[in-house]
Image (cartoon, rainbow, N blue to C red; front, side, top):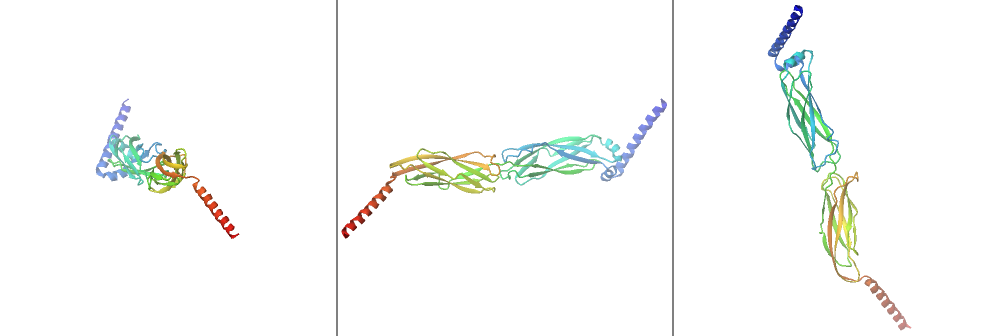
Length: 319
């Protein structure tokens, strides 16, 4: 029994002496040199979920990811006892966004985190990364965000720094702006045809096809519209469609009014299943004046008969 007690006392003395030696070395050597001797260094890893698998709608949402930062301490054979003596120390960890595309904004909710030194344990902390993309973000082109994580030096534990890259895709956002250089209201004679130019500007983030369609037109009126336009990818790209309208031309005096409704729908040029909202515009036409359908034919036949009569009369005179 006494032998066992002596062994316990001897072990305690060894531990005390060991800690005394470690403390003396820490006092004698600067922190950086001591860190090299004991080979203590923070290690960081970062992970996140699958929140970026779904494309981000430009200006339509703010996507928030949870960044999980894992902290551990690498050490050599001589570092275990020192690490025990450092248990409970606080290590600050700085998280920052260092690179984004020009059309993307990314922010960290909490840039400074803290972990407590726990020998033989891995510690995790979390922060949030919020991402928003602008209207000019190119549709379905890969975007990169670089995040830097830095564990500051604490006592004999050396600092550590690492960069992590996450990827995402902006979604297609259709946005067109129609304008009417010659107005959307005109007067026309019953025997005439009127043309409305429809200028459409692409304010979206991809090459877009605009489908046009006549939604409503009064009876006896005739209207045709350019069925589709192609708008190039660059912002501000324009193209012009034309609406051609012909009023009723039944015989007599006309004082007719009509509202013709045209719809415009943008569609992603590379995938017709991705459609934008339908925009509609009313065009107002007033038809005033006399209509004499077929009267030109009557005049022609009358002139032809007159010529025939004159020719016949001249023949008789010659005889």
